[in-house]
Amino acid sequence: MHTALTQKPKQVVKALLKSLPDRAREVIIKRYGLGTDSKKMTLESIGKAYGITRERVRQIENYAIANIQKSKEYEAQSAAFRELEEALDKMGGVMAEEDLLDSVSKDPSIQNHIYFLLVLGRAFKVEKEDEHFKHRWYTDDNHSKKVEEALRKLYKSLGDDDIIPESEMIDSFLNHVEDLNDRYRNQEILRRWLSLSKKIGKNPLGEWGVSHSPNIKAKGMRDYAFLVIRKHGSPIHFREVAKQIEKMFNKKAHVATTHNELIKDPRFVLVGRGLYALAEWGYMSGVVKDVIKKILEKNGPLTKKEIIEKVLKERYVKENTILVNLQNPKFFKKDKDGKYHIV
Image (cartoon, rainbow, N blue to C red; front, side):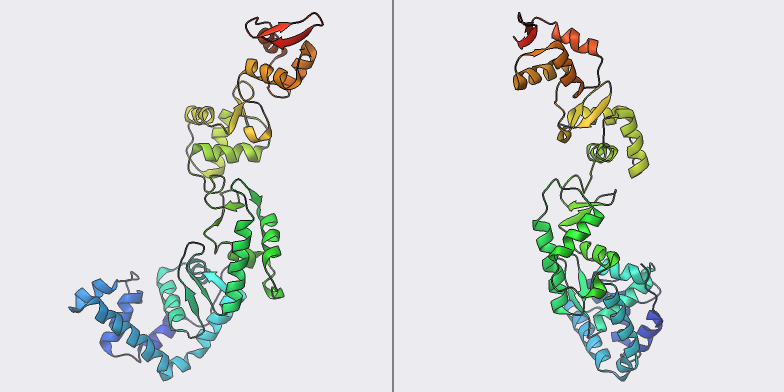
């Protein structure tokens, strides 16, 4: 969502800076990247440029901000601050700094001017990034705390392996938000609030879960393969897995490398010639011989027909392959009733 401001940030800031002495104005311009160069300078680098300490630069910065806030020009530009406050409220009342700046402009220079207006505006409050949340701006303490508490509760309700469609995640989130004003009950605002959390994340397929899970923060071919097979919903050939990784994630996936990663990861089960399924779907691991053994361990002696039926639910193989394994006297034997046992 793009938020258009009628007040021009650069013009507003230029007017506000007129109330400052030359050096204070120069320090603010360098500190916040308000000049032709949008790169922000550190206290230390500014201090070196003027031959003063970083603490002295900090004092000048604090003096400049206080001086602007007491100036007649600050009151004259009240419409700009009010418009920015209304924009923040319209977008949810509390936002991650990066999202807030991006919603106004993609231009780094304009973003710097907006950021400076946020610093100056008495209505705006900021919380630094912490373990749970990103650097964020808001105007109402109670509203901000309500959103944060709902996000904490939502995170506690999630399991490490959960992969939740966005619509379900939003519904779940809503259940944790108390006394929510109706104007905030829309998908875009709720998605924006979800993005405040560092503990909750979204994978490249738009599914949500805990941010540290490989299902959400995919890091390599194995994780990408897991998401591909899960989305496919049924066994899929490793060549197609590689193809879909490139298509869905725009990642280079060599067929041989992809196959090798599938072989090594216990999340995947080979169920046919080159066909892989997810272990979480309940498929038995191992070759056909191992599958027959596990079936007999679980069910006791079975006839040839019963064994074939059960194996074919676990493996995409020919019946003859099952019979060849079943005839191996090292592993299986048939009793007088025609049922097979484990040796």
